[in-house]
Image (cartoon, rainbow, N blue to C red; front, side):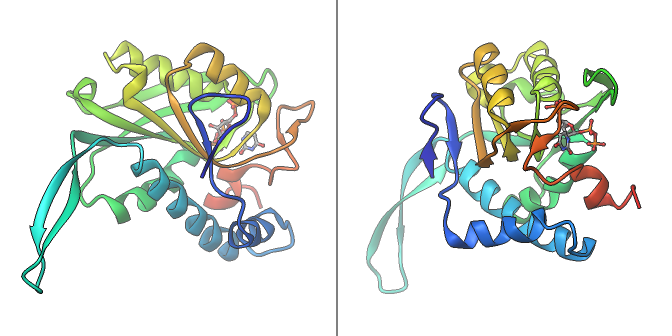
Length: 219
Ligand code: PRP
Ligand code: URA
């Protein structure tokens, strides 16, 4: 994991050969959908594990079966997930695999294909979200409009920027700049920063429409 050179609070997974190999599969448009889902899930798991590193901990001592003390840590504070529907829902299982019975709120935001502007349709969030760390889930950060719309919703519910950790698979430099400028204290954990955006606001090289591939809606 390294800190982005251009932004404080933006963390990028180490670009290991393992991670590059996983991206080579999910970016390959000739691969079947089943492979996309399987390997995207593996990347998501790595992002979730890294995201959990950003939660506060306190010291905790246990005694091992060797009857020896071990100085470890326990997580402090309560968390919840919030997925930006629909593509963010693909990241829910990865979070559940790490955090049993985690509460998950939903915000339905869809980009208008023409204007690329995000439209908020629906939200359902834990009542006590302001008292929790929020792991905000969306695999694609393109213009940043959808993420910022979701962040506005969380802030309006009383969440502080410092409580929000945005978990993301592919980010564009433009999206990172936009989000970071508006919400400098929200931490962003991403697996990779791509080159840029095309004239339709798609990430390039990117992988196309993540939600459509993952959920199989555009044949
Ligand atoms: C995609 C993606 C993000 C958004 C990113 O969702 O999952 O939410 O676009 O683009 P932005 O940074 O320019 O806002 P989309 O609206 O296509 O809906 P989907 O989740 O149903 O695929
Ligand atoms: N949403 C996606 O799924 N992909 C992009 O490249 C941009 C937005």
